Length: 246
Image 1 (cartoon, helix red, strand yellow):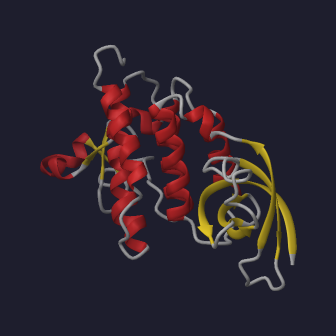
Image 2 (tube, rainbow, N blue to C red; image 1 turned 120 degrees about the horizontal axis):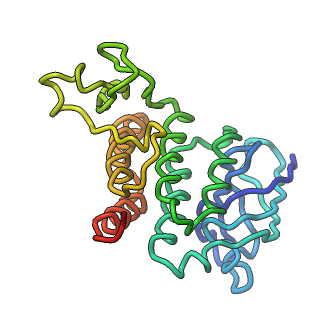
């Protein structure tokens, strides 16, 4: 069994004295584990960092085996990301959530392409907004997408202000009534409304965070979300709270 593909390194763990097990995400083969001989060596370890783009060839005697990788580095991202705390936290959160949320060997080509674009844009001015959109896409791809097109109560497409924490559907201010304090705030940025208020991204991350932790994580045995995601959210919130952030 053999295939070759480009992929994003999601994680690496030591295997024996010199080898490493690489958690790789590719467009056509999904999340796929494999052993890299010498992956823990001084030469290879700095190249096999989360977020790195690699050209990998996977081989195994049988399809069900873990198999092994031979790899060549296309692009490293960790070294550049270390220059900024938010950028590094973003890279870590993306890789950790993909590894957490996606089952092995199931292809998600659209999510792969979006994740690649997100990582390539690390450090851009509006990257936190792009990250919020990526979390929405992650929920959609894993079967927990939000429906923000119309009010779940009245059917109205205007005046949408909340999200139901149970159904993930939008609710208008009129439709919410006395239930408003039990609903999640729906910021305009999640509906594609132009704006430049970073606090809306924080509100949006509270919405996606709710569904990631209660719905997605719940389907995975109620495992806690990777701490890397909360570290990123905390940094985004701290920067949004700065007086000149808008």
